[in-house]
Length: 172
Image 1 (cartoon, rainbow, N blue to C red):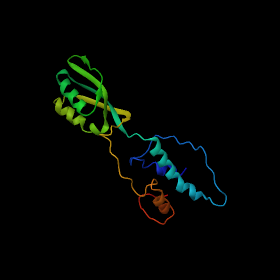
Image 2: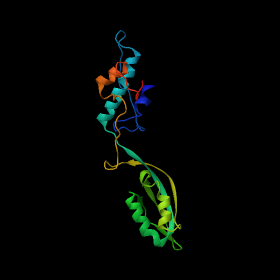
Image 3: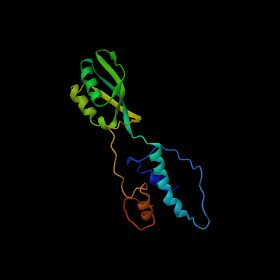
Image 4: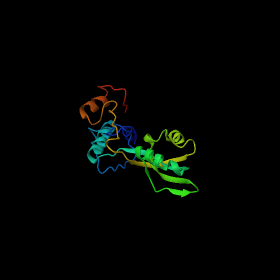
């Protein structure tokens, strides 16, 4: 129970693993040859091996948006959203203005409010709310190098866990 949250700080791709269900199907100990520390050493190896064998998906956060602006700016705004990998519904029109709703990755939209103001001469308004997560394409996703000794390198991991090899990045 103590080890699992620490293991999930870095997944196979170097990012924290947030959505995971673990089911222990079988396990045993030997009264002479096993001690509790053995399970603390084995748990990270088992979890990361399971992540490697089952495959993991890198997800990115997205924001839902609601934009209101004068009709003459629709083309510019739609083009900007498309470049930001945004998706949106057909706009609705009222009294010379339009309302556009959709979603856009957070990484692409950090400064969109400022850009919208510039595109519309201050006449456009955007409201963002958290929209969940979506699968990150391999072209967009980045992996991070594993910090410390990876439990997938079992011989180094066991030496590290037993105190024979030190790394400051991962502590049991």
